[in-house]
Amino acid sequence: MISNATALICLSKINKIELLRKVHSAIIIPSAVKAEILIEGKEGYASINNAIKNGWIRVIEPKKDINLGLGKGETQAISLAMERRDSIILDDAVAIKAAKALNISVARTTTVVFTALKKKIITKAQAPSILNQLIENGYYISTKDYAALISMLK
Image (cartoon, rainbow, N blue to C red; front, top):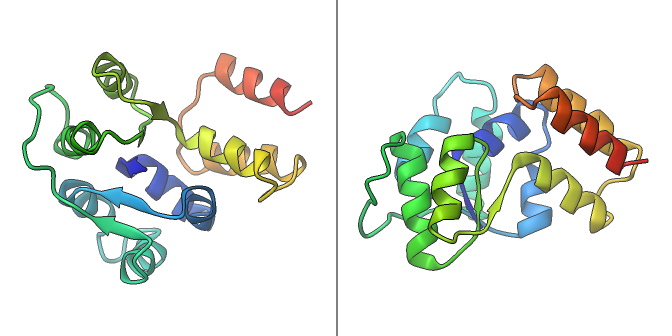
């Protein structure tokens, strides 16, 4: 599974980055994403740095960047997913459209939470709390999407 920065930043902010490892076992990021997320002193730095040191987050460069008119991290992550024929975790609407146009399977940060629930890594009671913590720490989700996710938990 390839990841862009948002899932790593948001999950590390709420001390839930381990959900990524438990759900996907290994995460691959390009160097542009590493540069976005691994800033000393920034919230989540230690947990992300440890994940890279422990090898379950690996940094791999795409052979070629596809020009998509997106940020460097998103461009490299989508390019890498395309090259490796792998899925990607993205949360930006424009980046999601670009990835889907290239037939790349897309998951969101919230998908990680629901996959953890499905695999019994977290309980049904924990899922709404994790979603709320993500939102409280800067993860954007529309009211409509939030309502749909919460109703799925009932």
